[in-house]
Length: 420
Image (cartoon, rainbow, N blue to C red):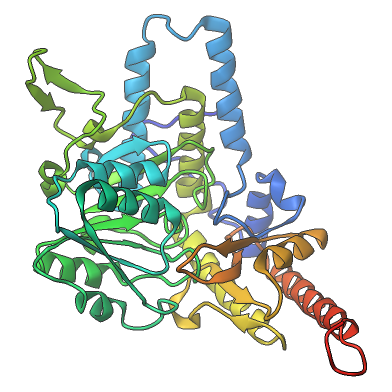
């Protein structure tokens, strides 16, 4: 049975007296999936910890046995959701009242973009490295309201991103929308500087944090961003259909709830949303999944340790970048000094999906990314659960894939030098 903590309480961690190798082995034993493959794809889905599975099964069993609508269910659901808002606020440097629960990053992004009162000719500044979860809703509002999208080429994100974006700002810019960690290069954006720049131009900063939450340190109040959307299933190791949206308290009035669940109304058009960010919550939540999310977040905070996790992710990311960069026939697509745990690369002449497929045959699970206008790359997610030995084994696998590709290319060219 999973024990649920009340807000503000923390157990004594079982890993505090362990050295790194012992701690890693202990934590990996609670992540069964990492023994099945070289698990390098937290950028899509992180490994589910045993405590999250136990919480989900226990909750589903209670619903089945006792019923889903017995007295106390609604009150219990409200308290459960508030516990997670408190937990996320603690982890992200925000007030619980600024956190809304969502079902995905895309839901949070769409909630913000749909809630702004747009005027024809307004502008949004974004980058070439964004995920479709941002590009698609941006395109929708451009089509619906006559918004101008200014999609700025920032290369691999390793340069002066803030100045490059500022050069595109105009008096009509309403929103600067970008990722905290770029999904197709791994670059970590200088959010504090971008948010300050946007604020100086009277624009709202909307952040796609799909690759950031659980990968890099986050202090939302310190960074000064206005809206920040995260998933639960990636680096935070929760189940699918979980996530959260942060809206800074002094920006809530600028974003109208499009699908409000909680409000006061008299049936004649009067509407008064609830005071906090939960005014943005859409529809019902699957209780077992939310309890599994709570279990995973509590485990990450109290047993894994966020600072330890962030440090390992970044160190392993650097080890991976250096190991892949040393392989002849590999081109790096990530700026080494601007990444954490996402490492992107290419093998010229080989499609990224084929690279991922060949590595999977060798027991290594990575991801490919191919969505214009961003680059087509193979992508490695170095999670804190990975070992240095696994990084080296992955590099050996990439080296073998490169060699096989080169042999295949050579065999396809006859002695005349013309392709067969």
